[in-house]
Amino acid sequence: MANQVVEIIQFVLRKSAPYNTNHQANKKHTQCKPVDEKSFLEGTVDNSGTTACVLSDERGGVYGFAIELTKKQKKKFFEDIVKAGFKRRILNLDDWKPIAENYYPLYWGKDVNLGFRLYEHTKANKTCASIALCRPEFAGYKIIYGAVLCKNRDVYESILHCDYSDLLKNHR
Image 1 (cartoon, one colour):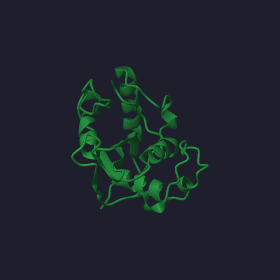
Image 2 (cartoon, rainbow, N blue to C red; image 1 turned 120 degrees about the vertical axis):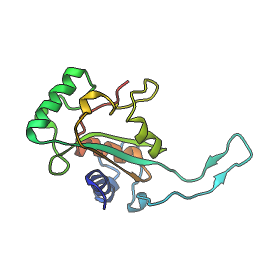
Image 3 (cartoon, helix red, strand yellow; image 1 turned 135 degrees about the horizontal axis):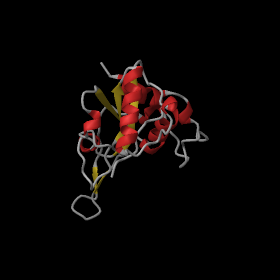
């Protein structure tokens, strides 16, 4: 069964707003389609044997992390994040809304290599943009993640940021 993060991502991919090229998140005016969600990767290797070798089909997708918090924990966690100097998208505690009961979005992202990108967020690596889930401010909390393969990942990441505001920016 999909967790709350995957459910929100799938909802965004399947709802009608992104199919409208006038949607505020669709800056590139890419026509999104219901077939943007993919349950597998496939394609051909184009220009094999040359330096122009590429995979034929767009790959990658969108992903997110969410944290389970009671109202009391939410306030303390938010204060700890502020005190620790994390870069934040949300500056006011009241603007941070749950995506499901007691699950609050920490971070939405996109990447061409989802598995490795999710792993990078567990490290405090200065060479990659990470939310550094290994930092002590996250200790003792239940954090879930989810990812969905899709095309037009820039558009869907932007919609996730707009419709389900996440707390953190990348930590470098």
